[in-house]
Length: 103
Image 1: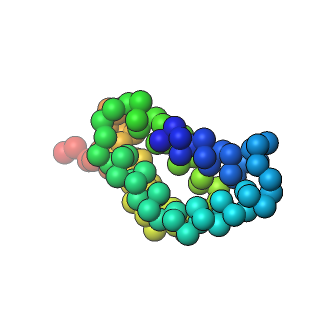
Image 2 (image 1 turned 90 degrees about the vertical axis):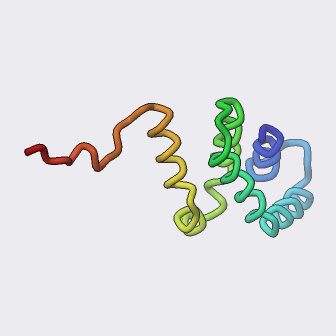
């Protein structure tokens, strides 16, 4: 995941070590394979309990969120997954627990 994060940084945030033509070529290639990369990130977020791997995956996803489009994010399970993971890790009550009426 660290390598993926660095790749996103290099390609999309204007790394110094490659030409614009090479950067555009790599962007096009990554766009065509993005669903596989995104699915991998979702699988890691869903299945892993290693904090270091989860953190690296979140950093990689954060590097690419601005260019993947909000529709893709909203149609995926990413938001629900993040809310579930964060709530369970921080031991926060569910949103609906705050509105239970005791009689």
